[in-house]
Length: 345
Image (cartoon, rainbow, N blue to C red; front, side, top):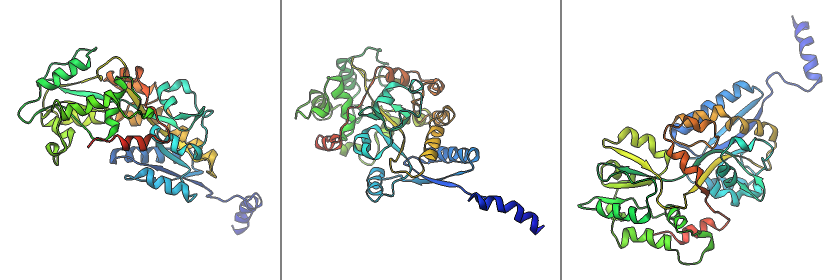
């Protein structure tokens, strides 16, 4: 018996092989409990199909990019990382060009453009998102498809009374960008004055159709919408499952007003340029962005997939329509500094 075992092991030793050799790659992402559950399932499926590769998942639910920055600075960055278009310019020098890893025609061009820089595709898209208005139809009729800012403001005024507000209001500049875009403006110009930003601030400060921070209190804008205290709530598809489950009134989803369409953002799977396991990392990223994995995410209702075929699973076609008329959010390395500068208080 011992002789038979030696005869089996000698060829393995001669070729430098081991019985259970695996290559481990690290993978980082933020995400909710439901997203992490999906990721763990995809990782498990991938490892079953690729027994020679082990995935070490690093979940960073808070301060993701601050921590990612430290990992890159200390040369301990993950092999594969989840990233969004807003941070692509900052991390461009650290990321592998993935232009040759996918068929770009399988994805919405807005997602490809948003995750590219200087001719390089720096992440394979997972999702593409736009903002829409959730409308309480018990407070106002559904606006027509080509509604204008004048229509929007009129509805906001009519539905504001006795502790109820016409429209939601976030102080983060990100939520003002759709208004700037509607006015044909771009925050990267940094011209010091934006008509779109002034209109957005006027909703709260002049017309008083949006709640102040003190009026929101310990609640959230989503909860105020569900409590029938806001008629028009600006958000993305990620809120659709919650509103569908919790709303006890008639509601609808409508596109942002105006003729310019909306801005869109994308997130996707990137590979560290300094990864020592690039072949395995590329194989994993291709699996993450496959049609099968895209369908996993789409079925949760949290995202609009960047993969066109998977988006056919979405019943609410308005989210798809919004993408087709959208343009990627303009970003550069100064983007965060500018959004901090124009943050509303």
